[in-house]
Length: 257
Ligand code: ADP
Image 1: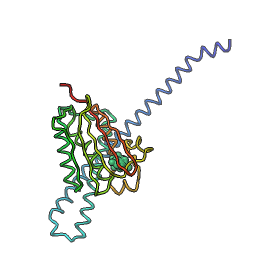
Image 2: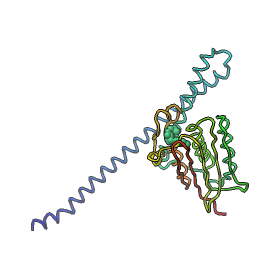
Image 3: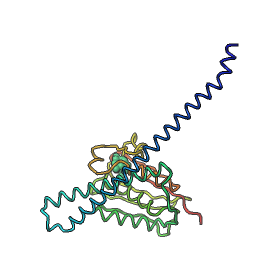
Image 4: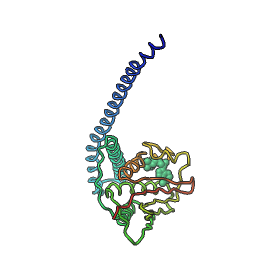
């Protein structure tokens, strides 16, 4: 009879346990939401004044004749650091938006041949590296957010340039495989050890902290790439060999005709 009693009691105990568990879960969700809100507010509050500081630095640097070479150098360093931080804050804002389901995409037909040419042109402006395009003559079209896709590709090209020597080239290729458009960014750089490859898309994850820090990134680039590309219905993968180079592959579904 005792066993029966405890059995009879079990459901109410389980119920209580479930209630406690649910309460804990909703408190946890609440504190996650607060944390996300905090990151989002801080990023926003910091970005505005920093953008103003950056603007002033740029305008002073536009008249370098009033400055000594040491002053120019100091102001240029300050401007570069401000730019990096503005980008980091923008990335944090995007990730906070994605976490709360508020990252919206303007999905429109995009001709990838044009997008690749435009992004490579942009990247080439900031670096004297050779960036080659391999793209078919016929247009490959997908439905995507053009600006977000540009951001993705620019991030991957930026990394390919950062993590390779100046005398190697980067290849950006576009092709169609069945019902998918494939964009690849291929470098002959340092490569990524196998055990790190599944983790580089995590927030703030960096393989070689010293090298990564000197290149000025934040460790958020690839997590943004993954969030954006998956938000547009695609995927991103990496294939890499240490000392030989890396290939990042973006796949996006081709728009039905
Ligand atoms: P970061 O701002 O550090 O570049 P990312 O999220 O873009 O952050 O990349 C995460 C890490 O992945 C980098 O710190 C680097 O160690 C590695 N990585 C990314 N792209 C490449 C690449 N093309 N070649 C070698 N390593 C790379």
